[in-house]
Length: 229
Length: 106
Image (cartoon, rainbow over all chains, first blue to last red; front, side, top):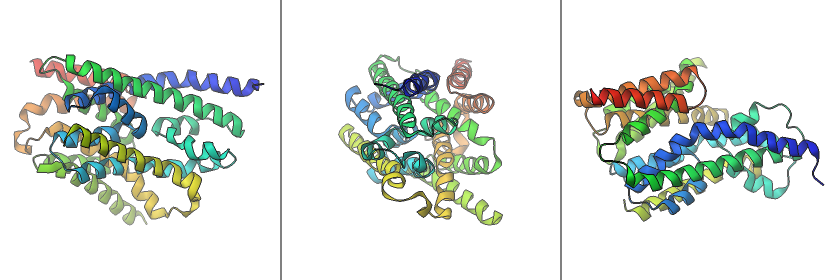
């Protein structure tokens, strides 16, 4: 029999996830449409969306491929972007400690910015079963919505008229993701350095400018850390 | 890159991402991640997203030829500003895209 509190936890997860899913839907659509423009069929792109399950790390290799980047540069950019998942995973390790083995190995596949922040905002998930229900409910629904949006974007992509503002949409979505991170001065400096270097390096071939921007931003952050300590 | 190569690259990104997701939970205790590495990883996300914004604004153009990209630049600034003030992506994206499209049409 299902415990009432865990059922409530699952329903609550679904209720709290719907607005979050709505907020990431535009990015999923843009990624699907971009993939189609690069020759990817919607179904493989949906499979990739479920595997990567992270918008920016999915989008970077697509844009770098469009810019003529090589395999290693595109792969490196995606990996660098998702490296933050190590931090999230380390922070959530206590929540997974008392869980079944299958959940410790496959539950983290649902770890993204949104699920991390949703769990951090809850102080009633100490019970392992309750946490598991919430995690699977929220993460599963987010993944289903995300993959669906990428698929819809892939189908609608070819229908977009020539000159549609798809490239502007992609930049605007990324800027919307960046905005909240600029509230503190340290990540703001990191972002501005990365943005300037990537903009200045945009004419360079093979996506070198993008990678240079990422590396410059991280280096700026490391310098700030050194000055503080 | 061919479409199949792009899919292969993305699947590789997904595989490495799963390793990132699962390693501190199922393989290594969290405490073993050095503080210096934690700080560097903390900078990776804003740096990567900002670099993609910069590359997207430029669209392959040199700094001196960014004139035609001003609508995208202004749209990005509007989206970032709205997102800074409000949680969620829908309103920032709608506002930024509306500004970019309107400026392009002028």
